[in-house]
Structure formats: structure tokens, C-alpha cells
Image (cartoon, rainbow, N blue to C red):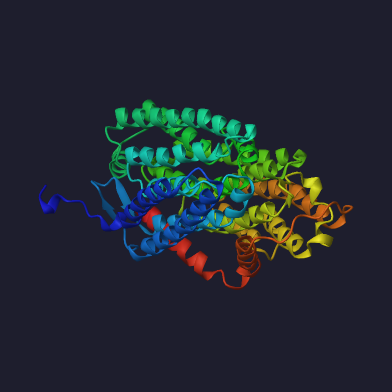
Length: 491
């Protein structure tokens, strides 16, 4: 191949580095591992530590190659400020959830090196999804992520709930992938290309309504993407998988894949199908409303805190989709700000959940948080802060996330969405405040185990500080989100 035709590898340097790291860590784990528990624990610690370091290095590489919009690999791969912002959020979420997972894995005899390697594989798929500039590269990235997540969901092989979670996620995920691929094939058949840039130009230059096959293809693509973000009516896997999967896996599911899927959702809808917004906007509008309402109402009766967090995440996705309905730069910026805040709130909440342990048993029932304020006052305070933030109570970061979404909706004259969003947020506050009531006012039960692992303490302190003091210095998140949104809309 002549050098002039050799693809520019610089934009994909973070992904290349992560791919090499995955292969190296896999070989290290295989050749060091043995049948003894002590060796498995030691190797798992090494791989987890190296995985977190690899994610941090990848983040620096993402920042180092960031700049104006660049495409490579025959326009299959795109690097722009939007991709940079989304990748950094994904890497932060993945690194934090891996960092707090070690003590849980060792306590439950799950300390196997494959966990870190699979998490890195999933993260690699997420980064490829975010930089996809073609329906084919989109699908490849999506499958790299999904196949890794199917295995991680069932990582605790001797637990029936974990196995069930992995199987449910696999079956429904395969169905969603098939719908996405079928929609892509319809779009290709009727529009003649899978390239985002070519599709955008084709629809911009066409006169009149697009072909019916294109519209049906978009509907199938929307269905596949809605599954990946746990949006109603494709949410049915979420509560069961969140409850059945090991808690660190649930934390990982709730953070990194959500950010990647929302970023992919925005890139696909605003990019190649941006000119057809009148065809898909009403679908996203209905999905957003359904997700907000169901996420707020269905969580009220939940007694398991992980199931409650599943419905909470469905509601949060509904709020984020309001920004996609708006479809302009302000809407995209509000989604990115919301997801940035969501990452830290959710990681902090799951760090608290990982502290809910008595002996060798994880406590997941909300009623067993009773009296936590008396036995572990600082942990109770941190959990309260995260619950208030998720409820959108000022002056915490979660309030500003919702505020930017609703302001963007009002500016776009989507008053109905804004009103339903506010009402859903008020209803959703009930189950967040119920946890605070149980923690502070119910009769104390048995105290949780002590001490809390240092890794969890570090993450709890860091995320709490960010959530509380976001009001004093929001500029970094707002400015970077604005630049990312401008690159997506302008691109």
C-alpha cells in the first residue's frame, strides 16, 4: 500500500493503545494465573490496578490527540471535541467503577483477572461507538461493548441471579442488535450508503419526504439505540440485570455504557439523520416522556436499592433525551452537562451501596439502611447528598443538570416536555427522600461492617466534593460541553 493511502493512526491512538493493553494484560493474566486462591487474588489485584492505570493513560492520550474534527480509516472513524468529551466521561466512569470493585470481588471469591480485561474490552467498544462515523463502524463498536458486558453480567458463575442477569441481557441484547442491523440495512438499501457524512448530504439535498424504507430503517435504529440506553419501552432488561449482576458490575453498567450510548444516540440522530428530525423527533419525544414517567413511578414500590437505581437510571435517560428532542446546540450541551454530573452522582451512590455489607453478605434491601446515621454518620451524609442531588435539590450538582435541560427545552418552546419533566422529577423525589428518611429516622438495625476500603473512601470523598461544590466552579464542564456540542452540530 502506498504511504499516501496509509490511514492516519493518530486520531485512533487511544483505542490502539487500549487494544494493545488488553492483549498484554490478557497474556499476563493467563501466564501468571494458577488454581490457588491466593495467586488468583494477587493476579486480579495486579490486573485491576493496571487496568485503572491503562484507562488513565488512555484519557491523557484522548486529550493529547484532541483538536479540530478529523476523520480516518476512509471516514469510518471520527475524532472531534464531542468524541473527546464523551470518551473522557466514559473513561472516568470506567476507571472509578473498577477502582472500587476490588474488595467486593475478593470478598465474594470473584477475584479473577478476566474482570479487568473484560471491562477494558467493553470500554474499547464504547470509545469506538462514540467515534463511529459509519453505520458499520457503529455496529462493530456496539458489539465489542455488548459481548463483553454479557459476560461481565454473569461473572459470578455460582450465583443463579447473576447467571439469569447475563442470559436475559444476552437474549434481549441480541434482539436489539438485530433490530439495529436491520434498520441499518434498510437505510443502506434506500439511501445507498452507510457513511454518516454521505447520508447527511443525501437527505439535505433530497426534495420532498424521504423513502418509506428510510423512515422504517430509522425506526429500527431508534429501537436498537433505545435498548442500549434503557429507554422505555426497551427497558425491561434493566431492573433484572441491575439486581442480578454483581454490584461493581451494576455500577459499571449504570455509568460508562450509558454515557457511550447517549453519545452514540446523539451522533446518529443529529448527524446523518439531522435533516429528518421531523421524522424521528416525535418518537424520541414519546420515549423521553415514557422513560421519565415510568422511571419516576415504578421506582416507588421498589424495596431493593439496586432495582431502585435501575428505574432511577431509566428516568435520568428520559431527562437526557429531552435535550436530544431539542436537537440544537443548547440541547446537546444540556445533555452533555447532565451526563457529566450523572456519572459522579451514580458512582458515588454505588460506592455507598458497596459499603452495605454485614459479614460475607451484601445488604441490598432499603429497609436495612435503618439507623445508618447513628452507626455510620459520614456514610449516611454522603448517601444523603447523592440522593438529594439525584432528586434535583439545589444547590447540589444534580439540580443544575436538570435546570440546564429544562431551560433548553423552554427556549426551544417544548413546554410540554419541560412540564412533564418537572412533574416527573417531583414524583421521583419521593423514593430518593424515602432513603433519607430510612437512614435518619427509622429504628437502627445491625451496623454495617467496618472499616470501609480505602479505595471506596477515596471515591466517596471525591464524588461528594464534586457534587456539593459544583455550584462554585461549573465553568470547566459547561465550557467543554459547549465546545463538544458546537462540534457535533457544526460537523
